[in-house]
Length: 96
Image (cartoon, rainbow, N blue to C red; front, side, top):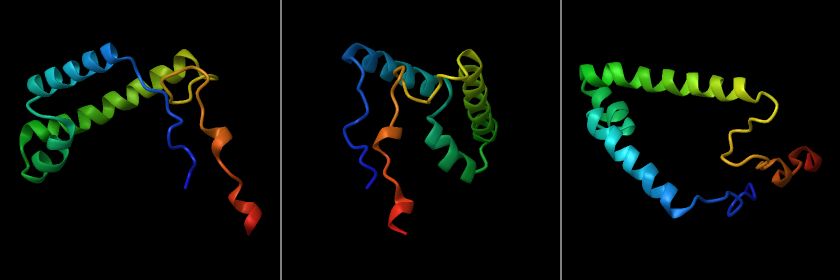
């Protein structure tokens, strides 16, 4: 057990709605969702999926570097500044 259950902060309902809408909109113009392209499309060797999956990975990598470049000391990967799960981790080496 990591002790992280219930530690992550949620988002307001309007942000969830906007995020859901953007996901649906993106899946429509992208001819499917990321999981569909990665699992089904790549397995069937569909050209759109063969192009889409590497593009999604590249977009994620670029976005990660952009976040790191904006605030290299403060970027933790969490949505809220100062949020961290480091204080919830236990020392597993102490019990040898």
